[in-house]
Length: 149
Image 1 (cartoon, one colour):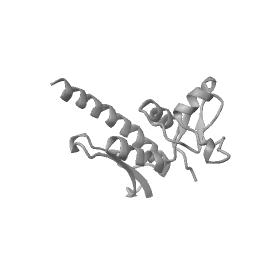
Image 2: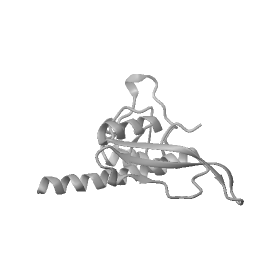
Image 3: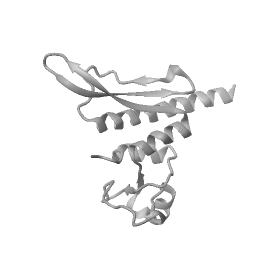
Image 4: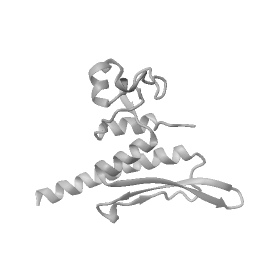
């Protein structure tokens, strides 16, 4: 079972200010999940990694649930995946779909438009997170427009 978001999503999380203690990190020559802390005092945050491991271009490796709850608390965005039963003749079985919902404005909501969904639950979640970061960017631009008026 996969516990940690993809490297792409972890890097986006760092870019958008995620700085919570994590069980692992990634960077140059280090894959997410390879290094785990010995105890609670050695959890990895982006600010701590930048200070202590700057030569690795590090980024914290959040779990799926950890990043999902960060979106709720920090940005008012709900990220979810759901099973999707597919029966098209050529494709049969359970696939996974995703949705990203803003508590601020419904007009910004984004849902998976893939009619066949994704075979892998974790792939669907990582794609949902990538779209959630796009939503953060849209919200940021709207907030800037509101402030300038």
